[in-house]
Image (tube, rainbow, N blue to C red; front, side, top):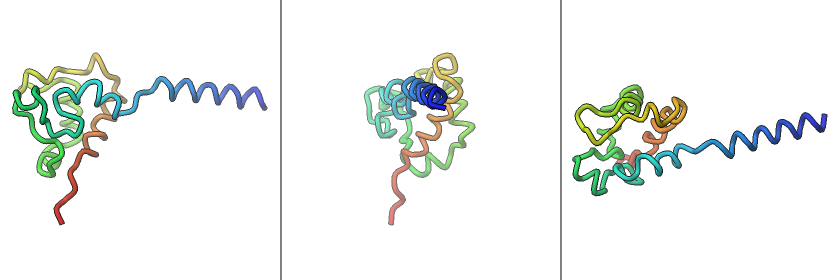
Length: 109
């Protein structure tokens, strides 16, 4: 029983240590253009006239499937948005979509 517990514990630690959070992936791959808050107030974001992902209208105008497609395949309207399908796993792309949804600015009172 103790061996089984130690094995499960070590497998769990190895898995969690190797897994990047969506926030880590965002910081490493996305924030340089989109900013830490998704507002695109960066040099690259302003140069490409990127939208503010925190705006409710921006969030409502895009489905999760559309966001995932742009992450995977790039954006044909913006050559700076390169495809990440060969750099990120499907799980990482799905996690990024979820992370983008957390960037929502609070609704006005």
